[in-house]
Image 1 (cartoon, one colour):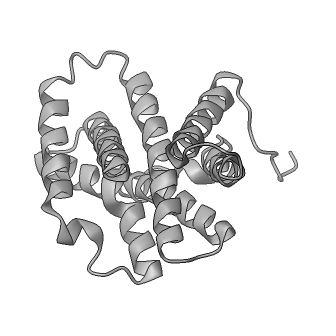
Image 2 (cartoon, rainbow, N blue to C red):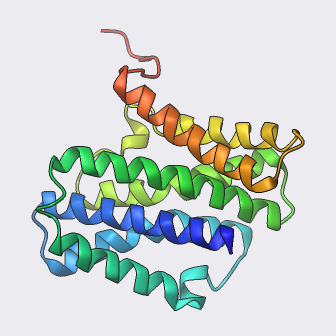
Length: 201
């Protein structure tokens, strides 16, 4: 139940993120719905295909489709209340990557995969919905720019496995991993921390 709640919260966060991007690009209603869907389920779909978990989860459980549609409707209705559009987009995107990183890791553990592969799956789950969203919206994906995006997912996943070694409840390690991903992403943006530029001027 705990993991399902986290999964649904991540879906909501990424759906809102997708809607905000689509509305910023002035897409029609169909475009807004499509962008919300790919942002929410793109990474998870790729993850499930990689581990052979088919049909993928959103095809087997209508909860995800209903959650995304409800998130689209509510975001459109209350978009005026979401002042400072870019800050709202950044916030929901950051929450989404934190939640989905841990969901991807959990799916990898259920499949009996090595921790390093689980971390990779967590990063894919968190990042690739945003990659597809940005490509469809004619943007260079955030993950490929200097802004730190995937790195917090990797470090948060690693932290989760380290926390698992401590004598604490599993749920605390899980939440700790999420908070580390979100915290690192917020700090990276606040202090303009970037990966090194490999190109010479």
